[in-house]
Structures are given as structure tokens and as C-alpha cells.
Amino acid sequence: MASFEISGYYVVRQLMEIYQRYWYTDWTDPVAYSGTKTFTIDLKQAYKLDKFEYYNDGTAQIKDHEIQVSRDGVNFKTVEKSVWVKPSTGTFNVFVDLNGEIARYVRIISYDKHHNSANEFRVYKVDGTEGFSEADVSTDGALVDLI
Image (cartoon, rainbow, N blue to C red; front, side, top):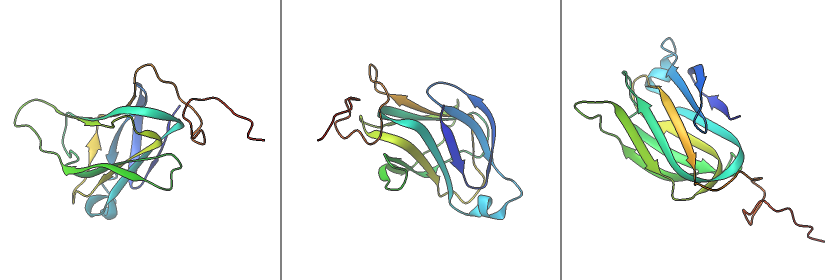
């Protein structure tokens, strides 16, 4: 099961794909309104990641953002930094290609100067792959005696 570290947010309910959450910023917190908002997903194991999905059918969409990945939760690599544009009709549903990046943590940073919300954050692993220890440098899941 994934866990989530959030600054200035309430996690409302849990849904499942690999892992996803519905959340919104704390409307009473001025930092959550005007400051940078960070949402970190801990997948509990490292995975070869296929894509990240952001879905919001309401208001307060994330637009100015950065998507980052990490094996250790300390050193993050930016895989996308852009400003998403809400379509004039339909739902706000964005996919970010993660190109097989290996990561245990996925972080979404919002630079928007307003509240944010999401119906779903979804992290997809590459089909046919399994999770493994983030310390496994070969990424094959095999434990090797180095002595």
C-alpha cells in the first residue's frame, strides 16, 4: 500500500489503480493557498514507471507544476515541468510519460497561487514488471551475496 506525505492538504479517501487519492488543499491555510504545494507518493517499493495520470473533474486544477521521481525520497529528478492547460470542454485528465524511470517516490509540486484539488493521482508501472527493493542496483529483484 502506498503512503502519502502532503503539506497543507487533507487526504479525503482512498481509491486504487496502482495508488491514487482524492485530495484538496486546506482552504483555511494561507500557505496552501499562495505557497508551493508538494504531494509525495511512497510506492513502498521501487518500480519501472510507465506513466503518471492527473485527473480533476472539478475546480482548482493543478496547472503550473513539476513531476519528480526518486529512489530514496531525498534525491529527486524532474521528469516534467510545465503548465497544463484546461480544455474548454470535457474533463481535465493529463498523462505524463515516465519513460521507464525507476522510482519508489513520485512527487507532484504545484506552483499555482491558488488552492488545488484532484480526483485522482495514478502511477502506472511498466506492464510485466514487478516492484523491487530501491537498493537493488541491477533492478532485477535478485539478491546477490557480494562476498
